[in-house]
Length: 412
Image (tube, one colour):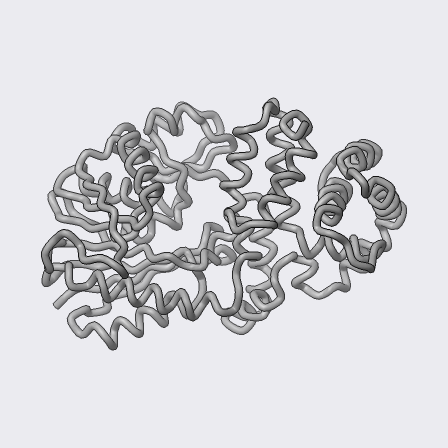
């Protein structure tokens, strides 16, 4: 039964992810919720699920050495799971082979043969991998690696691939509406505040009580950059135009000291409900949630209403691939111009609602020029009332946190 067998549970999750369009995080969350696994097996499923997705090109290269012909998807997923255990995890080879063959169904004989050969010839396969193209060694789409080389240089591109394949560190933001950073750090052995932002704390293990009690929120330091640039004051009227799931909204409310008004907008009802739950748990008292699609509907408020607006636009998420493992496989070359068009449309829809002298920040968690500098340049040409002030950004390889971009405008 999949619910009691961690490898079968992982296999079902991988098959569901690859056959649909669901995000890996959502697939894993639901899979673990429906399972009867203990904490050790849940950890195994989590590591192997994300690990296989992260290493698809690498694993398929290994499989190709022993099975150059075609494979149905179900058998390929079983082999990926087995090869990942043998080449990437510290699991005894006999146990990895035995347990994986047991879930292979009609392909048991083939899977057993390929896995045993992969053990016997592991040294020669690893040698071949050293000479394989970078997109295979680092398991990224070839077009994406080439794009990064063109935009940022070859060394940066390869370093970024290495970064994306490392386990993400755990950061939480102190919720100063409830507690101070010093109190949190003092209550968790090994916790430490970051130089980039004292509100951010790095922990080895996530203290779940912090999250449930609302004293902290899981948040990479890069996500605070846009809010710090907007810097809303207590008592201001603030709009978070693309607000779910609410991490930036909560930080804005903290900077506003829970005073004034914070309008939090999202186009999806389920996402907006999640935002409400998050903000209530964090003790945010000055927010008003609004369901609205900027591209389809007229907002229920007047022009020039807000002192400050944050547009944390939808993007390709290329700055957070280490955390969102499957993003790399969902992207196509066409996504970058499509995102640019979407982002500029949202920005132009939002601008009229900013007061004269008001501040507007455009932000993404992308590292792509089409979604960042090009959008800023376009808005500068098409919205003469907006005066560009400055940009701030973070790059994984340079700053050792996720990638992010933010640009500040002031309305004349």
